Amino acid sequence: MHAEKALDTSLIHHTKRSHATKKIPRQNQKITKSAKKPNKQQVKQHKEQNNANLEPLHLWIYSTVFLIAYFKDGHYKQGYGLLLQNGHVLTSSELAYDKGMYATTFVAKMQDDSGPMLICVARLRLKAIDRNRGLSLLNTHAFTNDYCQIRPESYYHARIYTKYGQDLLTKNSNPRKALQIYYPKISDQGTFEVGTFEVSTYKDILEKSRKDINYSGQYLNYNLNYRDLHRIIRPLLKDVYGRPLFNHKDEFIGMAVSLPNQNNVFATKRVIQDFLLDLKHRSIF
Image (cartoon, rainbow, N blue to C red; front, side):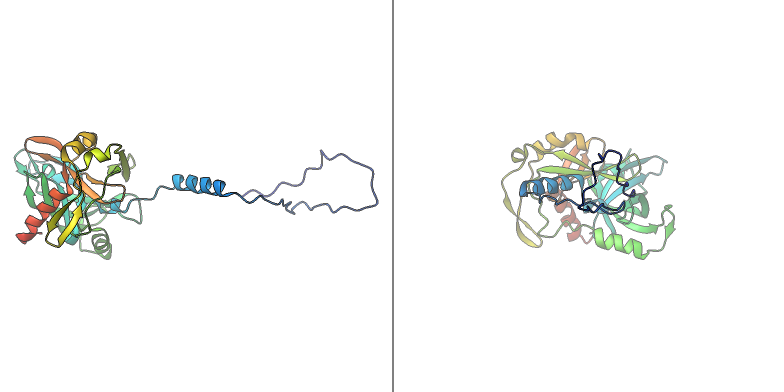
């Protein structure tokens, strides 16, 4: 802060001295004026402006995993995944299977809430794959330091896995109507950024709510119209394996995947739940 400027007397017209004495403010003395109290409209506009300038970070950023899949012939692929409970990561089958080979190992990088940079956290292996659904499940087989070197599990790893592992099978996890779609992307600085996609015709891409049954009971689920949603958000899906998508309530709604006969498609949350439930019934997940 700059110090207040001294009172400039060069522009004060000199008049004859009167008998009444006037108090002259000192150089460092503040001259206060009675401020007008802002009306309700001004307060509302100021609040809206502050809210527009402050963009809160979506917590699912800390559940997003940047994956590098390595294959035995030396080539690799990059994509995204979503951290689930118990050290599992959900991603696209296209990232785990390529050129007739399964990836031998995956390096997982994440963004911690203590800093913006992506750092290595673990090495993963393929646990299950369903190419018909376009999905695969990975599990953690070793933890790493910031330089991707294997090390024992630390409090730091346990905190990330416990705090940000998503539970996609709870009965209250049904996604709501998608007014906007949010997704992670990598910035030029090597950090996660939040991308947004406006769904202006969301009423046309949503079917009526219906009752679905899963292992935990009945609940209402807004089921996304697959064909219309795929048509609208196709630019978000192109050549981005395993990118998770969220609605304006920060609820997970699906993932970018590829199928054997169709690339760049969208696996809804219901499809993903069926995949995980199948694995759960077989004691794999």
